[in-house]
Length: 233
Image 1: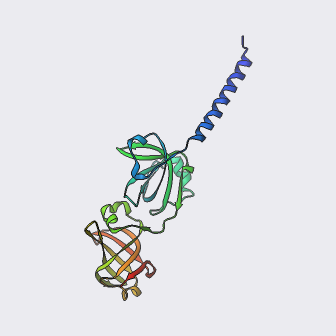
Image 2: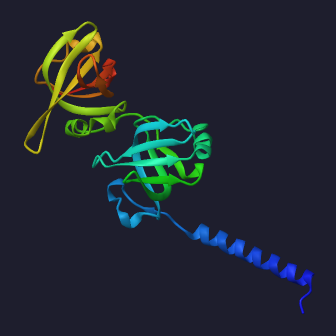
Image 3: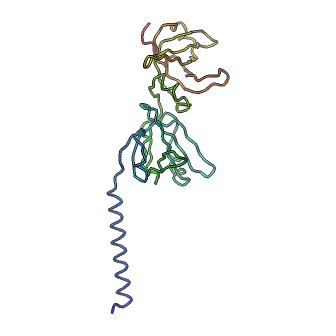
């Protein structure tokens, strides 16, 4: 018959073996690399890793944070969820602003009929490229403008409806995609660039994309001559 001390020793040994086995099992689990547009019901409950561009960040009264990521190639989006504890730790060191590229590792879940990635620790989410400018096409911006709201974007097109304003110029950028023509409103605040711009000139502009209520439309606002590049006259 096993006495109490031997029984206790056996229990402790078995517990240690279980903990060690669980540690090595957890360490062996590798997240599946997926794209945002590849989300499907077969991935629910799976550990995945993906990259995307931050388009929107929301912090709730509870302290939790929700981050919307977009795939600039497909305009597919997904929500990344951080509970209050993880959010507090991560936001104390990270600077997540729209336009930054994020890598997230977490479990796929469904919330309000939409896929989301639930982060397990603050180490599972990291900014791999700070916000600079994201090269997108005009049709992408106009197809899903809310996704890019507040983001710094770089767009190319042909200047149309050019006009000068106090301290700069306002015009449309024209571009074609799949036999359709798109026009994007742009405002440049720079006196020196005005003399170089005009209708028919192809340019690339870098600025903040957003909805401007006083104008009643979505615009790219460009600040500074260095953010306008003339491609050809």
